[in-house]
Amino acid sequence: FRMIITGAPASGKGTQCVNIVKNHGLVHLSTGDMLRKAVKDKTPIGVEAEGYMTRGELVPDEVVCGVIGDRLAEDDCKQKGVLLDGFPRTKVQAEVLDGILKKNGMDIDVVVFLEVNEESLVERVCGRRIDPESGESYHIKFNPPPADIADKLIQRDDDTEEKVKVRLQGFNKNVAAISGFYEAVGLKVDGNKKPEEVEVAVEEAIRSKV
Ligand code: AP5
Ligand code: ZN
Image 1 (spheres, rainbow, N blue to C red):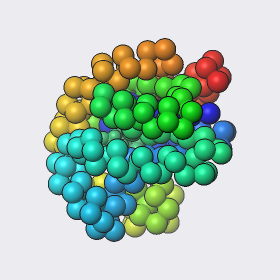
Image 2 (image 1 turned 45 degrees about the vertical axis):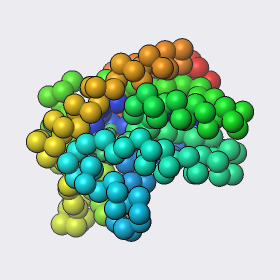
Image 3 (image 1 turned 90 degrees about the horizontal axis):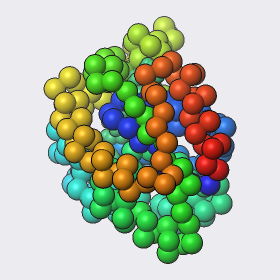
């Protein structure tokens, strides 16, 4: 099946995706991860996206849609199904995605909206630490990393209190359009709880639609 997980910056999308992939074997497609890799590899898309990402702004629709469009048509996505993380984020992106899926006789089965209070989002952003080798993400308070790797962990460029405000604005501007677009398949999940409790609620949401 095909699903979308969406929610504000640092609402726990990536954390829940690890569980969903483990439980359902879907191909995880995070536009944030794909764009960060493009920036690191200095591809034309990366060069175009970098400034927006560093400022915490949304990357233009045509750039993001270019990144994801080709990937969706690959065999593994067709066979295993996909878990879209952080895409679509605007109405235009949702329409483009709809077009790509329809062309391939596919549809979105469920959309999970993670809802988290704004104060918690700032705390989650500021405490996030990432292992640059494995890509695994930790939180200094909520998911402390093992002591032996603590030294090599890094922070994302856009994980500052100032930039999360910009990221939140981008999210808040588009959230109504996205929830409207996916009204029939969308389910809200309380993302304020502990990760393992959120996992149970996400699984319930998936089971109710798939
Ligand atoms: P992206 O990478 O998608 O960033 P984001 O949406 O801001 O979300 P995050 O990855 O920051 O958070 P998350 O929800 O995955 O939370 P996580 O599980 O890591 O996008 C980055 C940028 O790329 C955008 O700003 C934009 O520029 C560009 N971009 C990407 N997609 C785009 C698109 N479609 N259109 C346009 N531009 C696009 O958790 C966060 C922290 O909280 C971690 O430390 C974690 O350990 C902790 N945590 C997780 N769950 C819990 C919990 N339940 N309780 C306590 N702590 C928790
Ligand atoms: Zn993420």
